[in-house]
Length: 223
Image (cartoon, rainbow, N blue to C red):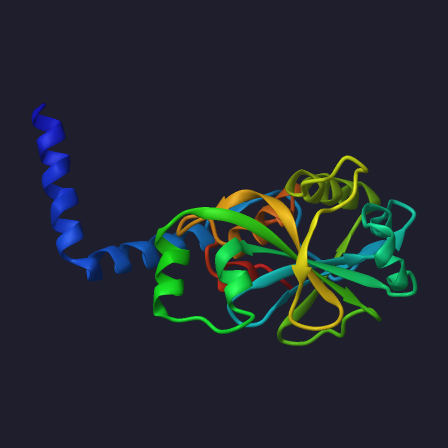
């Protein structure tokens, strides 16, 4: 009972001082980014080239649309066969409500709800006509076929399929080549889109930070 009162008193103090909570969160994010996990250093060289991309806040995993290990187009309904000549597919995961509302504009309440109210996840998939160019916001990662199979397993586990074993489309995305799909998982302050992307790297045993709610935690380990 005495310990519970002690912890309760400290919890109350932290709630009274949101600045302390913010600093604590940022320090944890820094430590999580610097503490490594995985035994394979990330390289630009490999039999299969994937990419990690960002818009500055959000991050995606970009994979070949079709190769000997996986034909992702087979996971889509017939309407998506128009993309058969495209080369890459970007997987992004995030907050369901925020993603859909961001198409028409967001406000501070939307941001608050995204961070502090756990909500279901959603997949945002974007078809690329060509292999992405390496830029400050798009980094190549070379992997082996075995590692790619591990990545595919991870992505498979994030997808909700219909009875025909196809992705379930929610609605069109921001442009003509991107869409939203039903996904597993819950988005919250301690599991963000960047944690999700980082978990994709972890699935391949690549060396990265142990906990990366911000994209900088991922970029620190990329070549």
